[in-house]
Length: 293
Image 1 (cartoon, rainbow, N blue to C red):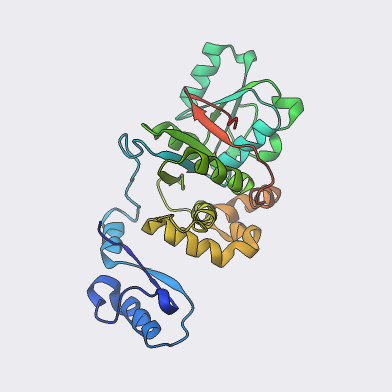
Image 2 (image 1 turned 90 degrees about the vertical axis):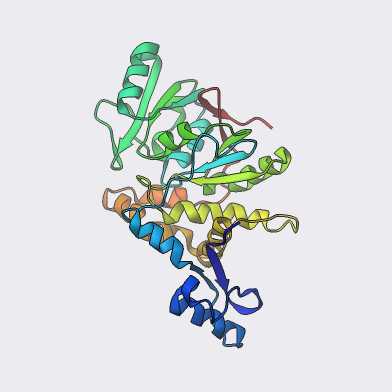
């Protein structure tokens, strides 16, 4: 398997000063400094090949999730700000089920087919509640008096389309910082290989989702037999760097700062809470329900 990420720092350093073509001048230099015993703070270098692909692809990370991408593996979708956090909140508040849709038109059509009064329409575009919908995508909106025993139809910008793209997984869990340890426990019980899928934003990288993936990788890394892929190792390194100030870090991400501008500061704090619930949403038969252990 081709290697795209190289770590540097102490005895864990990968690469060396001769790898200028693969790591660039700075990357090769950092690796060589670490190998020479210079106390360089740990980090990672992405290969020049990945950088070339990124710029050749209109500054977008190539989509890696396809219909065959999860075959036989357990999948975990992460959309920290805010879909997967809100889904856990909705189940905590007692909602019966959620139906994720690919977009506004599909959600509206489904609501009419099921009977508008029988469902609650939830969703956002650009962080704001969709006109004509009952709720947006703020976890604080999902309270018992509103959603208990109800069916929710959801259309978010990134989370719900990502969930609907996943095919062929043996298990599909929805993770956030709020439920990360329980997600890991379920994966341990399942015993399958795992693929972590960060929803990102409009096909682009989002730091907050990577950090959450890193939190899961951190739990997994405590088991000596765990093998982490390059992406998970990057996520792990980033999480360990920021885990002591998650709320502040989330607020400074591109999407987090945007939500703060919209007045959703409390959402940031809530999304940054680690292990505040044992509720884990699971996607099965076209619906999101509470995973029952």
